[in-house]
Image (tube, rainbow, N blue to C red; front, side, top):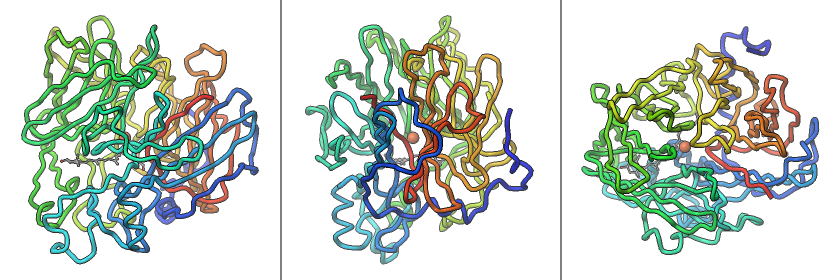
Length: 484
Ligand code: 3ON
Ligand code: FE
């Protein structure tokens, strides 16, 4: 394992440096990146699309939580050794209205309130589709995703907003569509698999499979008892897998204007986490299994093996939330739960679930070679804290060898903060780790961001190229790479 000299610091970062990445980026840019250290690999051809909250305030009024920020897409296009940067806000109905009004007009799911105190917010159950969580190019459409509503379609060349997209009539207005579709490679082409969750006293889950042309070729609906907050799912050859975290929703503070809906989730440590196995073959019955209480946002990968179902997921001991009235920019990382990578081995026959911690290192945003999605795999890349023993912002990338247990790390500490890594396979290479790892990092030293390109076969040697943007980009959520 490789660590940099700064591992000797008590803390690998300063809160003030970290806070810089939570400032809005109000400008929209389009330029060729001309400050580059190292060399862009010749076989890297395509566009990295990335989404995330770009607006952390409306005309100076701070949002309560970054997940409430309006979606802003960054597109970095690699073309014959050169790279072009472009960023644009998704022109959602809410973004356009709030920018025109110059003030907050909508309540956010994570606690942003309209000005005027609880009375101005009570019984306003209208939410703003902020299209801020992921962006994917599929079936000829570029879609910005936010799990509680329909996607917004964008022009892939200009990032201009075309409008809400109902996927050829599939989604009724206001239908949720998850921000975590999975691409399942197959011998007769890939499938994009995604889901909708409509939660309430009974929660309904609908799964959709799309062929490469974007046509919906399978749809399966299933209801589960109780409330559910399901951000991501997993897919294997035979199953869709949903983790129903043990949370309940106490809607009262939301209804009366005191809190956002997402702040009304209550973790139930004495209840198990339920794992729903929904067979992709609609003739087969759904199974429910249980495991110890934990909270999962993201699954890394999953596959069927010898009659068992393996699921690797980032687990928290409890639902990570802020205390009432707490300012997220002042967060004390030592007091918030951290995510660790766990492997769940599910035996549908014996109805058992075993879980094993793969690494104690605090981590988020897993990625892998897309050819290995839904298949047995060896290498996982993930954003991680600089040191393994203490919760902190993500400042490094970890490469985990799931066969040998080896770990390799590259760290941007103390002044760098990493975003989600994205794996782009190298041309004509079949080793599983032969890929370029792309990650947008925020560098507090000059309040600017950089796109890093690491060699997946040797990440600890540091980036093969560092592309310096002329400005910062606020911390983002998810993205995808689209080859040309
Ligand atoms: O009753 C439901 C409750 C609820 C919470 C109704 C609902 C569907 C409206 C709802 C909404 C959920 C939404 C909109 C969730 C959005 C989540 C989001 C934008 C992001 C989640 C990110 C998760 C993680 C783990 C991010 C980690 C980031 C870092 C470690 C670094 O910055
Ligand atoms: Fe996510």
